[in-house]
Length: 379
Image (cartoon, rainbow, N blue to C red; front, side, top):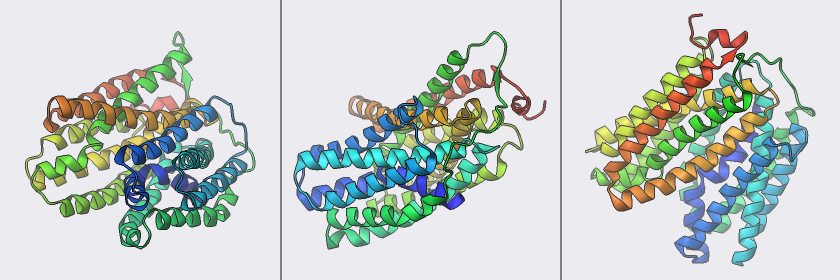
């Protein structure tokens, strides 16, 4: 089951995390312009978010195993057919199909994780291994690209996806519901609670997304070489893995309030200070703090959504919001850098997570029930 969950999340995150390599391979292999290659990448990412939103709204009703296998087949076929064509319109359709397949895999895994007693711990452990696999892939891909650019890259993705179908067979054949342990306190509206939760998530991820979108530019502005930036980002992936692993170990030993709200505040410190780095040492230190805390907090965001709604639909919607929030953050960051400077990103990188912590605080105060007794870690 654990390997199946890792596989489902891995295939769901593959396109988004490997997007820089995909865009570069399409530019070099098909001689596409930056705008055209970027459009193909955006089409895949937007398809993932829209499909996950549809799943969360109940538009797609399948058992996790069936959903994941269908998604892997669709994604694997889309990756393989991408290798065989150079027609832009067809490439666009294929990348959308890959996004839909990836979303099915990701949704199936998250729905299953939501059925666990402590979903944040399982999310942390699963994402730790997923990040490790992606880090290994990021290290290996640049060595392979010169041998065929996009054809080699998407052939590799197709092979990994198709072979991984065997791992997905351990996902449950029906949805598993755990007893609901969170309840909304009297006088509070469930829909208001969910709205506040999503506003908090959006502020957190849009805020850090403005910084992440320009993390390479920020590094270069400190005077370090592109090679060093790549090395630091690779090391940052390992730090991210440790952050997710730490969330798995800590779980709810100290309640959910402290890791969620306190973690968002510390994340604000990291994302707010990275743009102000003046040399390689400060850049590396703040980058590590930023990535560690973000990877630590996200399992609690997903876990809280899973605890509010044990069907997994709210947790699936939370991942869809995550996709859209990152995209919005990148657009906001572009406007800020164009009209001000890279250093101006510090304000948004700091204020977004801090405001998110305020909303998460309100959400935690609105909850009651056996699990909510441990919200503050001392009741």
